[in-house]
Image 1 (tube, one colour):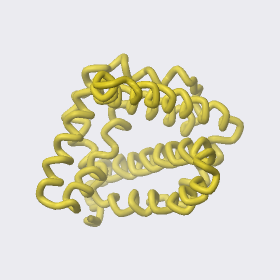
Image 2 (cartoon, rainbow, N blue to C red):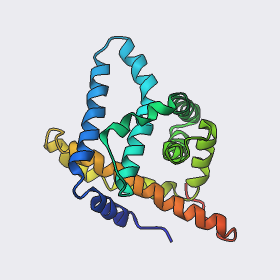
Image 3 (cartoon, one colour):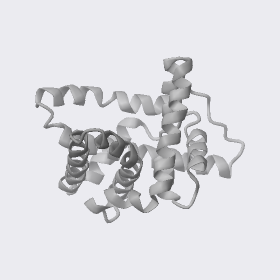
Length: 208
């Protein structure tokens, strides 16, 4: 049985208890690196393109560690560079596929982005698989769960508006909160997928 989004968010807050400083630290380090790169002419844009994949994988490894109440360290945000080629390839492929779908209409592009959203979580759990396989697994995993993820994202809109009134300072808490909530979402649907594979007669409803 799928866990309600509000419960996933509560679970995220529980996992963050006593770890807010750690989570915020990881967010700050990642943000500072991104800001520094943005100020470097030409190379900054190329550099951002090259490191986004590895950093995305690293942030997810870090988030999953916190979410699963495992030992987490800020240095984990750099772990994606241990799989540099694979994480870069996954990022470029996802961007390419989303762009191609977007050429049809904006809605297919959005649906594609949601379908591929679990790619880096899958890579974090299975670093030995190929980038394309992670993308394919993400599409299968998100079958029937796209709208659930959209609804989870919608739940943070109010918080984002509040952050606007704090001149962005509130994002230091909101971004880790969102990251851990999405990690909880991944583990939840991963568990549902395992149940489905063990019981083939269980069929997920089609949700666009």
